[in-house]
Structure formats: C-alpha cells, structure tokens
Image 1: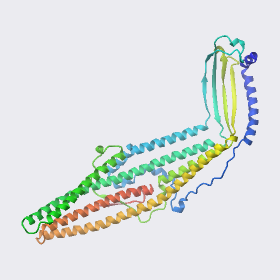
Image 2 (image 1 turned 180 degrees about the horizontal axis):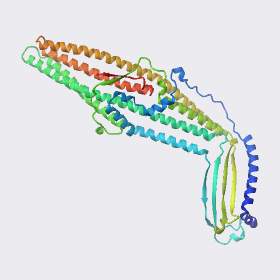
Image 3 (image 1 turned 60 degrees about the vertical axis):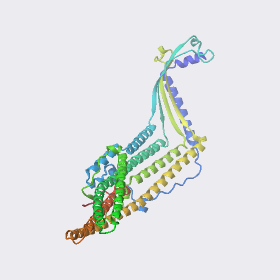
Image 4 (image 1 turned 90 degrees about the vertical axis):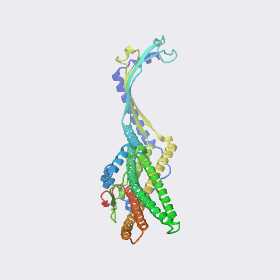
Length: 496
C-alpha cells in the first residue's frame, strides 16, 4: 500500500492528464446521457394565471419608449413661471428623504440584477496550502512518513461553471432587470407625487399670504364700523345693539386669522418635510403677482394615461414574476456543473514544483432532481402565486388610474367653474361697492353702508384667492393622475 501511494505521487504530468481526461470524458458523456434522459422531476397540478386587463379595453395605451425616456425630464410645474416654486421642487428632488430611500432601493435592485447576471459566469480561485503534520502509521501512508513532523504543500487553481442547460440564470437575470426597472419607475412616481405636493402647498401658502392681508383689512374696516355705530349709540340715536353685533363679527374674523396662521405653520412644516428641512429653514412664500392657470381642453388624447409610471412599474413586476416562474420550471430538469482544477501537490515543500507533482481534475457534477419533486412543486406554486399577485396588483392599478383620472378631472373642471362664477360675483360686488361709495360721497348714504360694501368686496376677493389655491392644488393632483403625457395638452392662461 505504501508503494502504491508513493507511485501516485510520482506520476508523470502528461500521462496523468491524458488518462484522466479520457476516462472522465467517456464516463461523463455516458452518465450525462442517462441522467438527462431520466433525471427529471414531474410537475404536479395545473396553474391557470390570472387574466391581465387589456389596456385597449380601458382606453389606456401602453407608455411609449419616448414617454418613458421623458419622465425624468418632465417639468410641467415650470409653466407657472414661478422661480421660487421651481427652486423648491429642484431642491426637494436633490434632498428629499423619501427620494433618498427610493434611490437606495433602485441602486440595490441594480446591484442585485448585476449579481444575478454574473451567476452564469464561471467562478474560481487559487488555493495556497502549506501544511505541517504527522502521519498515521495505521493508514495508507508509507513508513518513511511515520517519523515526526513532515511538511507538504498544495498550489491549485479551480474553476466551476454552471452550464445552465435550460437557461435558468438568463431567466433570473431578466426577472431581476424587471425588478430594477419597476424600482426606477416607482422612484419616478414618487418624484411626481413630491412635485405635485409642493405645487399644492406652495399655492396654499401663497394664497394664505394674500388672504391674511385681506383679512387684516376686513378687521380694520369692521373696527371702524364698530366705532361709528358705538358713536351713534352713545349719542342716543339708536339702541345699543349693532356695535355688539359688529364686535361679534370682529371676533369671528380674529378666529379666522388664527386659523390661517395655524394653516400656514402646518403647510410650512409639511413643505419642509418634503424637502428634508426644518420649518425654520424654509423661505417665506409670498403672494404671486398673478395666478397662472394650466387649462385642459374638453377632450383628452387617449394615450395620456398610458404614461403613468405606476402602471408601467406594475407591468414590469408581472414580467419579473413571469420570468421567476420560468426559472423555477427549469429546476425540474437535470443540470451539469463543470468543475476543473489543476495545480501542484507534494509531501515535502522542496518537491512541490518538481516533475510529477502536478495534478488535474475534471469533474462534471450532474444534478438529478428525481426525489425533489415535492419541494420543487411547492417552490413553483409559490412563484405562480406571486405572479397572480402581480397581475392582480396591475389590474387594480389600471382601474384605479382610470377612476382617479376621472375623479381628478371632474374636480379640476369644478374648480374652474367655481373660479368663473366667483370672478362674476367679485365683478358685481366691485360694482355695488362703487355705487355705495358714490352715494356716500354725495351724502346720500351713511359711512357704515360704505364700510360694509368694502368688507363684502374684500370677502369676495378672499374667496377668489381661495378658489385659485384650490385649482392650483387640483392641477397638481391631475398632473399625477394623468402621468407625464399631459405636457403638450396644457394651455397656459393667466388670471390677473
């Protein structure tokens, strides 16, 4: 036995390689043929995937490649021509904590996809193993090794390659790419939502700045009105009543002023959170010189909703789930993993790189999932359930998009009607206030009548500003609802 082991160590490199390769290649070929023919696991049960809603049925065409490319460049809010608003949104895109979280998810998904791609590459390494040991006298080692400690060494390079006969790694890579694409689209959907929220909050804060000024003017007029009625009551020209009523109105206006101040603080805090700042770091949002409107035509192009990133993301999740199902199905078939190694090995480090110390190994490892059917079927059913879930989520997203678009469009048109009628009301109130002021100047009516008409005029202006803010917020919601396809649809108009 000792002589046999010694002869193994002294084999010639070339002879060993030829014999080993010939023996392995012949055996591997015969084993592979037999294994591939009889080593499959059987799929139990039948799965009928959920039906995916057809976009044509809901007049919701798919987003074109051009529309998807334009998502990061979309800037519908710039049509308001408000530099402060533009700066706030750009800063939020750069510093928003919400976007930072989603950006990390996108990067993680991309890294995962890259890692899955590399599964199809051969892997390997180099091993260096110098050893100092004693040898057993009752095993296969010759007597020359029994005496004391002996050094030995191993230097080898090994490569392992999954041949992936059925394309499992390719399918897993496509699934990972689908997940990464969906993550990017969810990031873009979040960007749009943040932009819309900032537009709405900016409009609300702008309106509050105007409305607080109008409210202070109303309080001043009502105090003057109260003073005039008090003078008449003290002079005995009428009973004490109207001054008390006016004082109650002033108290209500002061309450409203407190509400406005609280709304301003709350909106500022919400805006600061979107931008990754504290309320104290936020600039003052001043009143706009004019309220620019982005008006829609009566009919919308049918392809607008197809540019919603949430719908495209849901579609990519279906693609990823479908590829995962395909990948699991390949595990029901045999596969071959080819392991190749070569190097030098010797007892005695001085002999490590001498002739006869070399070795080569070719090992085709064949996986036969004959007895893994139960586990593989469970894994397959799990992926099929994930696919059904992705389809269901997609269908829900599509129908919600249609419903949301209709709702937001109705709200937008209603806000436009409210503004039109409030402008009409304001025009009539201005006319009446002018007539009352004219009669007061001519001495026909009392000053209190003029004061009340001016208060009514300020109230009508306040209502119109509030309507402008509502419409601005509704435009922002409609922007998210319609996706990015609406840039060419909006028509700019200014209300002075």
